[in-house]
Image (tube, rainbow, N blue to C red; front, side, top):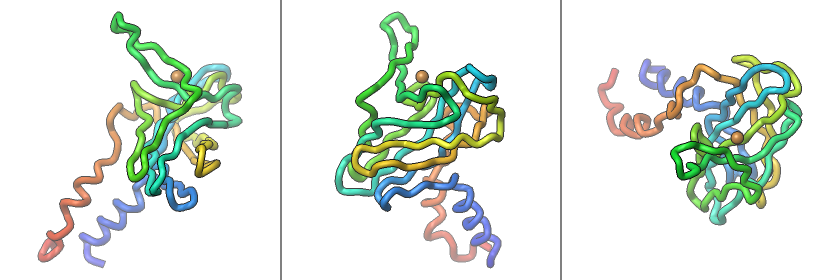
Length: 167
Ligand SMILES: [Cu+2]
């Protein structure tokens, strides 16, 4: 393997254990943040990519790591204060598109942790989609992670066509 190809293979391997559901939905880059202790709360973030021809909808999430798991979003209350709201109808993932759960926006809320969860621990979460059904994901706890640090796939694209003589 050339060094370049090795680097590409490594980059591909680092693309955060994508979970497949009937080959139409892909859960990209899941991670969680928690307060840590039993009874405290946490949140899980990821991007759902929909490779299907029909839209789907994330309608529920379950995990034994918390007493209650809800789909939440953040909304400005009009006075510049961000409030968290439960979104029982869930989040639409458009056909051929994606929906990102991210800091300051939509997220899976973990309320009342049933055990202590620290950095590096992995939270098992079952996502329920209207059409694709249940998808189980593993979200590593990463409290040090900064917002907006999602993997940039564009750099990957840019390298195509430049493989000649790159070594
Ligand atoms: Cu929340």
